[in-house]
Image 1 (cartoon, one colour):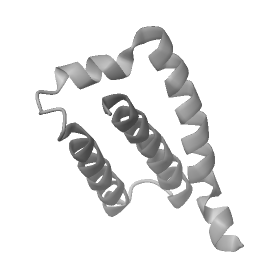
Image 2 (cartoon, helix red, strand yellow; image 1 turned 90 degrees about the vertical axis):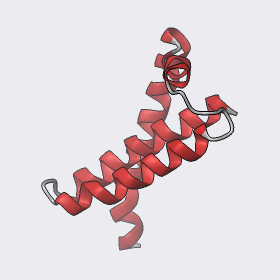
Image 3 (cartoon, one colour; image 1 turned 60 degrees about the vertical axis):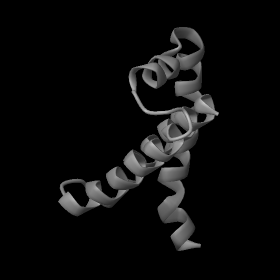
Length: 90
């Protein structure tokens, strides 16, 4: 149960940032602009986004300047951005 409570900030930040980013995307079409600005074939864009997400999730705790709870929150936000970008690309 304590391991679930440790990941709760990541899940909550994922949920909140996903909802907020979907509202922003509906209004400003931000994810479409990001997709058009990246010059990679459409089939490879989700792989690029997931690879970039994994690099960020691995790199941020390595530099070790943030507390663990902040790392979980930041990882949830990065994960929600990646999920939205890959959904919009398919």
